[in-house]
Length: 311
Length: 281
Image (tube, rainbow over all chains, first blue to last red; front, side, top):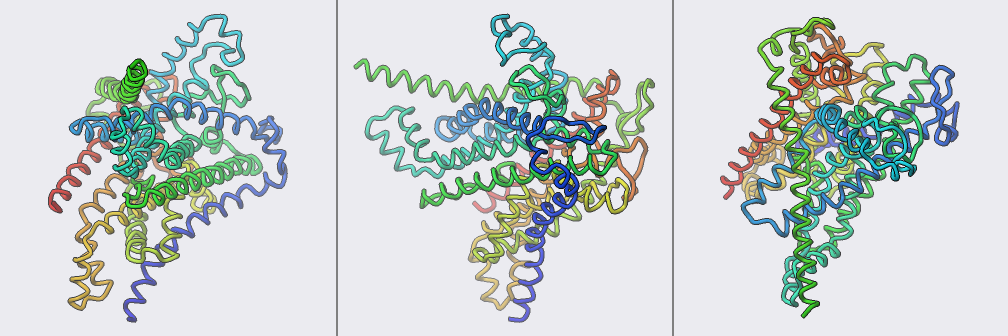
């Protein structure tokens, strides 16, 4: 029994370490942003001046850029990701299933920097041409105002959308698996078309599906490199899809090594702290929904974790 | 009758839309692979693997320092993450249902969702600030922290797949729990765990954001853990946003090497997984 206890304590120490690590991240971020939190308080989150020279820091443009790009990405990626999940789990011929799963997983395996490289040299020129050929009538709208630069919100949202599709679709697929087969058989037996049967399966799985979408949202919020390379890095708040803007992750990536004085550094870390807290909430919420779903669909396979989705 | 026709029409449109979604997602994948391969092959040569970067304006040169740097960084990350990840994975599966196991699982999933740039700040705070020096150690730490939850969760999931009879057999023969775990249960799941580690390495090797202000970058050859070190990803980033044609070519070559590595890793993982599944029958 003594050895049993020793074994448990020894390997338990490693498990505790993981918990400590998460707490330590939060503590370190808070510790290194104390100056900025003290100096600006809540003002930090509602003002728009980002002037390192004058020591004036307001993070609103970055929050706006992060939310705007992530929501746009979500609007693009959600229908596509759900379509893929439905196709693979419900419609695809058996032989196509494994290759399609592999290809979508490949999309998740491509490094962020490679997405960025592709976006700079291939996607941005295409977007620039599309922007330039937008009719004048539309250009008058605030949504399409500004010069056609190519770099800006559209490019960032597009590349983000591609990057989160595999995550959302992998989890949605697992969630769909938890819908009891009897439920679909019943629908078909009643004479439902494929669409009607799948619609009822989707309705059954709605909690988990929302969880899958939220998981993609969490990814989009924190994505750094590819966005940094195409979003334009201009701290302004604009509704225009064409405007170059800035995100929270991008400003940290670009300015961290340039932050010479302490207040500047602490302001950047504070942005990181909030990014940490927001993604924590979004991810916990998403996991909670997926978990609730897998519990309600009683004799079912538990959906694999987001970690396993990438594997 | 017209209602039936409409229902069948709606259904057909829906099925077509789902298939279109698949094709739509494959377009960027195909484009990325096409450009990485075609642009990368043009720039890839022996010098890329054997020479150091040349100064601006001089063409040629390679990324030897960055290749070695990425190797060193992932090595440090693996040394940190494999023991912690595997052992906490063992804890989660052995003591499933305990409060600590649940907390650890939650921590692992949380850590997995933390943006990589935030992990970079953490590594900066604990491994760069105290020494006032960017270092390979700090970069490796950042990557290691990212790797831990991936390894922990795969280990846990794979250990749970080991048939209960194996454990019961070991315990019935009088083995202690530690003995049963390390001599019977872990070896049974080992191929899968190794696969998980390989995939985690592939993912970590492609990370850029956590290295920007931990490992930083280095134009010169270095394997010193206390000094800044180059990496494939940061080098590609630097080259991609530079205005030089020659550097852009090098960036594509780097991307090709990186993507090939990831691809080989996932193919190997697939083969191993398939073989394991066949053995289990």
